[in-house]
Image (cartoon, rainbow, N blue to C red; front, top):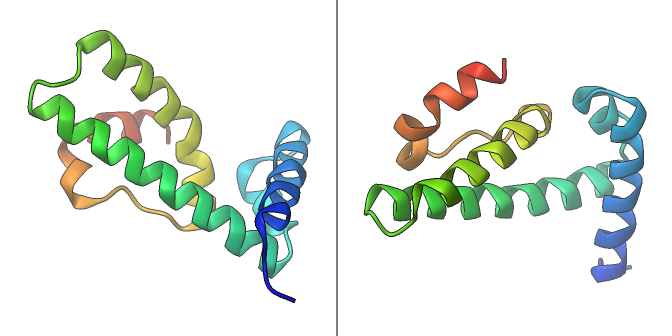
Length: 104
C-alpha cells in the first residue's frame, strides 16, 4: 500500500502522544520503520524551514524578535532531531551552534 497523508497524520499523532510520556529517543524507538520514515521526513522539512529562517536572519531580513521565537522552537526540536539522526545543516551551523550546545 502506498503511503498517503493519512499515514503521516497518524504517525505524527502517535509520535506526539509518545512524546508526552517518553524521551525523544524512546519515542522514536517505539515507532515502526514506516512511522519513523514519515516522522523523519516531516522533521527534515522543519529543519529546512529553520535553516531558511537562519539564512534570512543573516541577510537582515528577519527581525530579532522573530528569530528569537524561532530559536525557542529549535531548542524544542533538537532532542527529536538528534533521536531521528537529523543534523543541523552546515549553512546554519554557526548561528545554531550555541543553541545546539545549550540543548545538550
